[in-house]
Length: 96
View 1 (cartoon, helix red, strand yellow):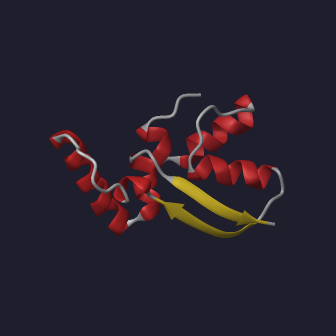
View 2 (cartoon, helix red, strand yellow):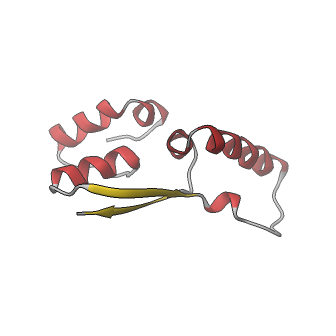
View 3 (cartoon, helix red, strand yellow):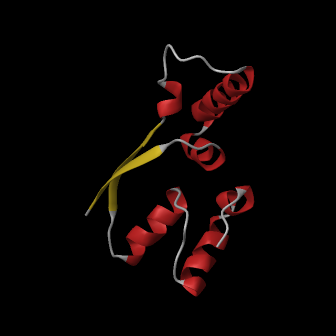
């Protein structure tokens, strides 16, 4: 199953792929939630981390600076949307 921007923004496609194909090769927020639900886990707490905004004293090309700036703006608007569009994020979850 391919993972692209369309499947990232439309979680029903990923859910269909998981239910009909039985596996997923790429993970994001929605696929992690789907697998945890499938295994009967409940999410108690979650936190998104963004290491790209924590990098200091590293030389970036102009293109990298633009991507970092755009990801920072989207991060301020919606952390969940930012994790769907950009890479390099981690999702920490406490489950029961």
